[in-house]
Image (cartoon, rainbow, N blue to C red; front, side):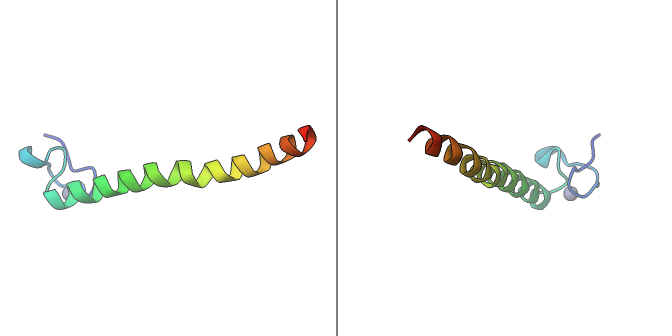
Length: 59
Ligand SMILES: [Zn+2]
């Protein structure tokens, strides 16, 4: 039997791999949060420093 990735308790069949619906929701929220934040956080920084200089050179 596996363990809950969120709190380490034994996982429950209906909430596998989590121990409860609570932990499943927490992990899901964390996953969505991370996948949303990482691309939106990094994209503006790369975009602002790169195209800015290349655009000014071309125009
Ligand atoms: Zn748990």
